[in-house]
Image (cartoon, rainbow, N blue to C red):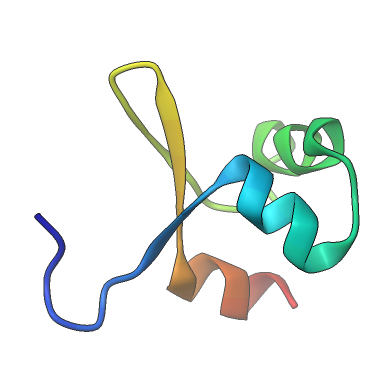
Amino acid sequence: MQGKGTRVFRVKAVAEMFDVSVSTVYREIKAGRLDAYKIGNAIRIPEEALRAFT
């Protein structure tokens, strides 16, 4: 369940938003330049992390 104002995005959606490959998004997460968290096997990127990244 998401809290009020807390949107999260899948890696594929973020890649499409920034017009980059999924691999590039994973690389940015691994390098620590894009915050993300893992739920089970899924990686999710909070909206706040995208604002800080741009």
